[in-house]
Image (cartoon, rainbow, N blue to C red; front, top):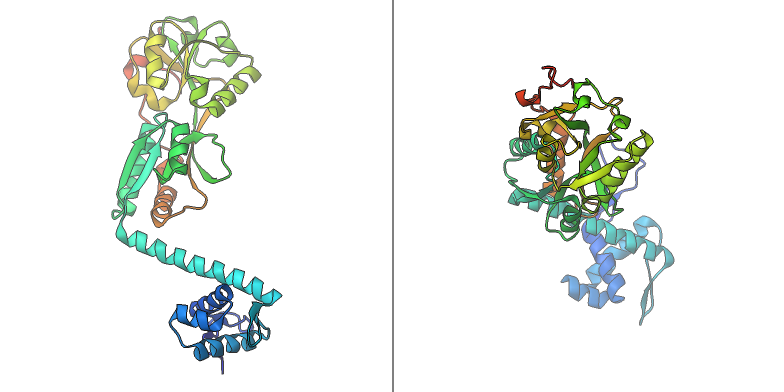
Length: 334
């Protein structure tokens, strides 16, 4: 007969697997280890001292080892007892975490999601719709921040999840890629390169560039710069802007080119054409980031919704607007 607090696995589980131990017994062992006294531990646990001693002794017998060394005046842990207590503490922490996950999920607490203003707008709306459809009890609060601010808010617990442009750096983060989009080049429609169906990066060598500042997202800036240099282009930045749409009036006035994604074509103004870059050497990667040690029920539900979102691999990006027609009357080839 198994001692109290021990249960035998059944069903399809392996018969030679060691019997499990109830969490109650683990709490008893941890209490005695922390008090180094059966009588003080019994008072703390609100059980009788003889019952506590008996149940821990039965546990030791079932394990065929001593967890505690006992004398009339002293209680101490054995070497194996110290290992057992550490594992018991972890098991208790995990059990409490499992209970908290269920409680927080049932409570329907808001999920605070940060997103970069550089994100594909269609992706943001698709994520919102998918989350609402999958988990209507967990409403989203969306907050727009640039990536560095997002990561700061994430680490401070001000937001739960961040939709970011990659790469981002942080060993305390879990980062999962979501979407990859090629960068195209926006050109003044009167420029001779606008007559081409596709443009090589080296073709842009003599043109000024309109770019976001390096300090806004150093990792992306450096990644794009290095890719340009490898392709024979060292960008000459004439103007700095904080978002892609802000760059478009400069391009329309013939003051340079800018790189952008097709998803921002609804913001186009007259006088611009968008052309693919030969070989698609430049891409923008979007990912989801959350704290490695803070994956709540709401975060888990949000990530599940993302995995079910079929549009992530082929997002519904708006088609090219009429005002992107070039001098020759042809629509930009995508």
